[in-house]
Image (cartoon, rainbow, N blue to C red; front, side, top):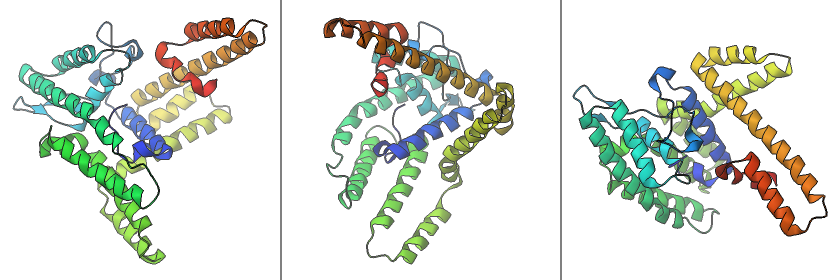
Length: 313
């Protein structure tokens, strides 16, 4: 997780694309030499054994470089907010900053983190301002108003330069999506006029935004190739070589790790479902069954993982 492009947060399909984009950014990280593997007690259990996402960098003058990568570093730790207290997370981020930055830049990063947390705490009020109806035309006007309010809110915590550095690509994505939505809802346009206007938007897209829009499809195409290779009898070593050729050996290692985690999750889900079915087939009273099922959940899943179980019940 964390702050995501506005329109992504509003529809499941776009949410999937954001997840794929996040995976693409994760795969495009530098080699493991640029990341740290987490060790206790600085971070939540859910983050142990993972590589820290994002970067903290300073310029040749020793001042902090404010970038979207720094925001990703903040959000990486903040993803454990349901598991750790905010002071504990802030402490972990502070340690990460000290490990990557000289004293002055680290202090500047802490000050930016303080304002970023205040901004995040102010965001729920904007979420509540989402229009009650998501049917055109109220959806468009509501989203435009919300986007404007969000820009105004950021102005209370960040300079224009900081805002662009932290959220620029998200804003480009949202602006492009809102412009396309406006064209699609403009009843005064003929089909030909609409297509021409959309084509002009396509031509105006920046290289960075174009790459971000294409990124999810790159991930999908690569994984489709991997699945096809497996279906043809290819080994996991062959899948690794395919991924390494498409991305990098480090990215192939990360995807192999993700595969192992997925298999482990699916295995635990299958075992849990089988044993739960057996329990519910007994003659025990409902209270005893509920306690037994909860004991199964505790045996196979962490507290955070249990929040995902509703999809499998």
